[in-house]
Length: 275
Image (cartoon, rainbow, N blue to C red; front, top):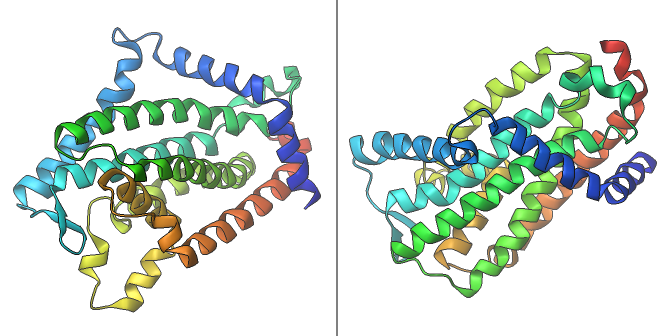
């Protein structure tokens, strides 16, 4: 518990630095490209079109039923979930290697190491906000207009950030000690794409098998993606109507953060030894 308080205080104290470093990270990543930050939108857009072509056109996927009586085109349904998946995948992968890839500069730093995963996540967070804006414009053009349920996006964005930061504290620490952790995580997350409701309407697929559906829902991404879609398509207040799932999600995030902060504070004094 003490470690958790230490990490939280460090994030609050150096929040201004986190913002500056995240902007620098984002700009430096794209400075050598002619199109600059436009690639942050182009890359996920190309991926969405590929998945839509394979899973929507070739397979001839019908409209997806988000709630009884409400069907949406597959491309709209895919877009609403894929933007969150992209943020989660990129931020988690980059967060996991954020510390060991910067071991050479640790001796020159005058800020706590727990700031490093956070500013990496923030750099991806700016891209995520941009993708949300683009998605809103596209969905409105398709007839899914801005509604009162959009307000819950603020909650789900915050929830996504908390989940990623908790995971990154764990993985960035373990990856510094054992470099194979990063490679293993990359492989697992690629598999997770097919185990989350990003490409498949899992609720419909396993409607007759509640046991498998319950196991699938243990994945916190299931909760977040369904929440995003509830906001975009105006189907209800997901985090209130599914309050048991909300409770489970926050218990899991709290556990991950407790484990992550404990590991980070315990081992960070020895990080320089892994150079």
